Image 1 (cartoon, rainbow, N blue to C red):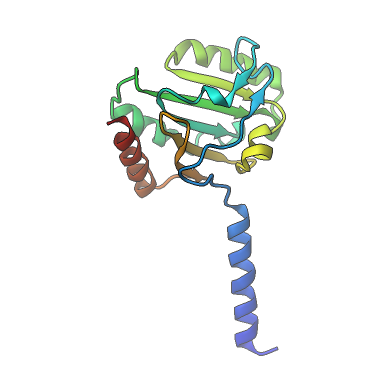
Image 2 (cartoon, rainbow, N blue to C red):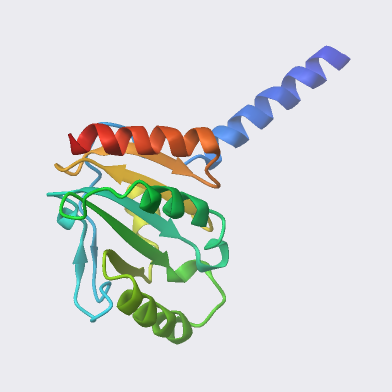
Length: 175
């Protein structure tokens, strides 16, 4: 095989691999309904249909990756969006970590007491990976308009340009 064919084959393989690991939701669409039994901190079910009425930014987090996008939440908090129109949802992918659920759940209860403007949810069976095709073992950031349609979706560590785009989209849908 010629060197050019080898390089082309490698390029195609890498391109398909990169495309395969991206798990961003389609913009402008409502994702399928998801119900997480005992997903709320109080043990009640969480339903994705609750993502309406406000502009929400949802973080879908592997607890082992929880630090990689802390700068995103800080940037959004710094914007001081009106809390009657804007909110956070943090969904912890408990099935993506070796840390025992009871330990994470204890931390989440404390976090919920401190972050009263964030809805904290537990996904024990990777439902958002299965039904929304979010990336597993990752940190996904998804923003929704007031009708529950996706206005931003990115997995992995967000760069400065991604954060600018996210803030711009949130601001646009708050008006």
